[in-house]
Amino acid sequence: MYQRSFLLLLMVALLSGCTDFHTPLTQPTANLIPPAYRFYTEKQDTVVPWWQQFHNKELEELIEEGLQHNFSLHQTWARLSQAQAIARKTGAESIPHINGAAGGAHNRVGKQDGRETNRDDFSLGLIVGYEADLWGRVKSAKNQAQLDAQAKTEDVYAAAMSLSAEIAIAWLDLISARQQGEQLKKQLNLNKRLLELVELRFATSKASALDLYQQNQTVTGIEGALIIIEGTEQTALHRLAVLIGRPPTAALNATQTLFPSIPSLPPGGLPADLLAQRPDIRSKGLQLQGATWSIAAAKADRLPRLSLTGELTYNSSIIESLLDAWLLRLAASFTAPLVDGGARSAEVQRTRAVAEERLAAYRQSVVSALKEVEDALVFEHQYRKSIVNIDQQITLAQMASREATWRYLNGLSDYLPVIREQINLITAEQDRITTERNLIQTRVTLHKALGGTWTDQLVPNQAMSLSTAQ
Image (cartoon, rainbow, N blue to C red; front, top):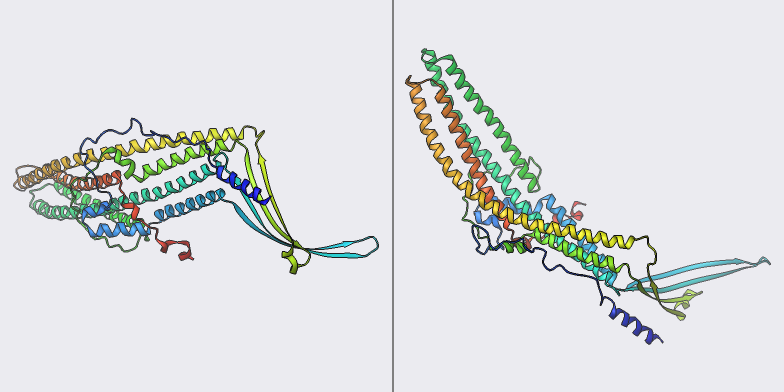
């Protein structure tokens, strides 16, 4: 009899999960991906971290420290651990559950004649429960949870990729502020010397009071701009410190005052490579796959469930003889939803809508990634042309400023051309610094837009775990 029961349980277990309602998506990116980029289609090496191409030790140290100690990134690691735990918990439903049970009771019964009887009951047993996954509900829920956990892994990689770019941009902002500050200091010294000349000319009645006021105004304006730039430098340091996981006022090894040399344009591969190289796209794709399994689980939940239970119990009134008598019980229960007010049908509709949302999000992430690459290529091309143009403006502004100053000092013109050319020169030099910074930032954005597999080497920093904090 027990052999027949065992064979029945085994047959049900083998047959369970053979049927499910899952329908995978085959072409979620149909008609979205162009055959090639407009500028290049070379293959990209995505294993090496992109910032190493700049060959700058300070930048490398800052990014590597940020990848280890950034608090936002640590939050994504924690969310990944949560998703992995949920996946293990969901997957546990696919195997039999075994529970141990032990009990003891003292019974005292009074009779009508006033006598009492006492009895001790002890029990010890094992209870086994298992749901035969006839329609793939448990399998679908398990696959959905596993895909969500994989998506969280890609979210970690996407966060790391964004963090590396944020650190680099903050570092570039810091260098830009320092360069602008140095440029303003040079202009301030030059204009102070020019102010001394105007004061001498004013003392000999060769310059008007208006000339003196205008030059004082220029000097004061440069001093005001320096105050703003110094504040910009400090806030850039604060931002950089927080990004690498330090207090905002912490001392940083960030002393560079020159922009790094920009390397040659990285190969981008084909647009279709983004599907494999961008962790945010991979995450959206995994979430979409998980949504299709959610639909299958919701459909299976509308059908009957078969649950199997087994119980082995030892009972005795004397604990020493507890194992002398035993009871084995095998049971199967078949439950089917009859009236639920449309709750299960509504759940199927909800999971379909979730899948629709995630499909749109996946397609949006693909076209957004393509746009980011194309935009970065266009901006880099334009910034390079702008730098050439600004260099010409600076050369002309320097020549015009020298000529206007010479003509004024020799009494051939008034002071207005001097002021105008000084302003033009300061503006052009500041624009040169900003444009160079934008060019390098665009290269950083391009690396981020192209993605990469260097994130596969990341591991969480155990020094930031809860046990360490405790």
